[in-house]
Length: 190
View 1 (cartoon, rainbow, N blue to C red):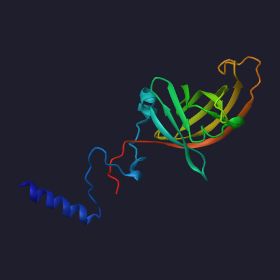
View 2 (cartoon, rainbow, N blue to C red):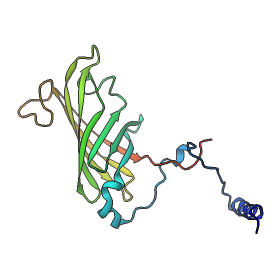
View 3 (cartoon, rainbow, N blue to C red):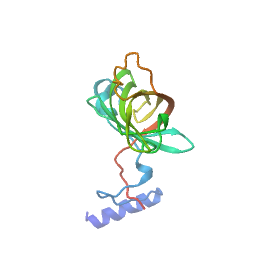
C-alpha cells in the first residue's frame, strides 16, 4: 500500500470523527494544551513522588486577578518562587527578591515548603531584612493541580529568618492559593 493512499485513508477517518490534525514541531505550542496531563498510577506516587511533582506551577492567589506566582518544586527537595508584586510592594510595603526554599513530603499527596527572600525599600532599594514564607501544599489525584495556604513573616536586618529566636517580625502576611502544573505543550499556537 503506498503512503499517499494510507494518509488519505487516515485523513478521511479523522474528518469523519470531526478531529483535526495539527502539525507539531519544536517551538510550536498551543496555550490550552499547557495543562493536559498524563494519568498517574497510584503506585508511582509512592515510589516516584519527588520526580512526579518536580516542575513549575502557575499559581493564583486571588481568582479575580488570575495567575500571580510561579512556584517550582525540584525533585531534590529544593524550591523556587517568583511573585508578580515583588518589585512593587509586598508585606510592609517592601519589595522583595525571588524566593529560594526547600520542601518535604508530609503526606500521600502533601508537602510543606519554606521559602526565604530578601526585602528592600521600594523608595531607595535599601536592605530592610529577610522573610520566611511557609507553604502547606496539597496535590490533586494526578499530582498536577495544587491548593493550599501560606503564612509569612518579614524580619528586620540582622535577624536570621530561619531561626529568629525572640525577634518579632516587622510584617506578617498569609493567604490561600490554587495552581496548575505547566506541562510541555503539544500543539502549535494559532
